[in-house]
Image 1 (spheres, one colour):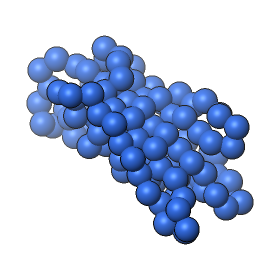
Image 2: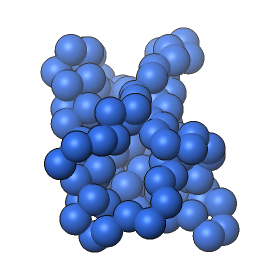
Image 3: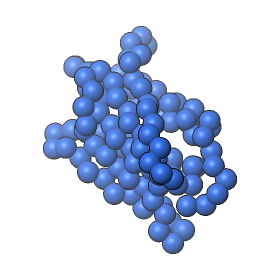
Image 4: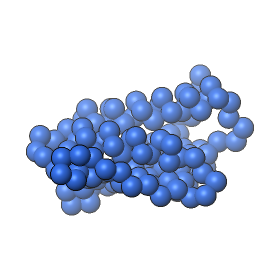
Length: 113
């Protein structure tokens, strides 16, 4: 499947915490999820802009990054392309997963939250 080459993952270190911003197409803020450790369990809080669906991805991405990187992680996402098919949505979701996996592989930390 061609296209969607403008999907990007950017990071901002915020002290020990991490902000990941994922955008593509008409970039915007559609949802934000923060994952953090509470007594050994990862919890996630999410805020979504009404009418946007990015929260269906940000929650799992933030949880996975927090678990793997052992730190508090906020994922903000805003991706918009007009008239996507279900197959294109699935492809974009897979691309985002690959971006996160590449990021995690390059940035693992050994210490606990």
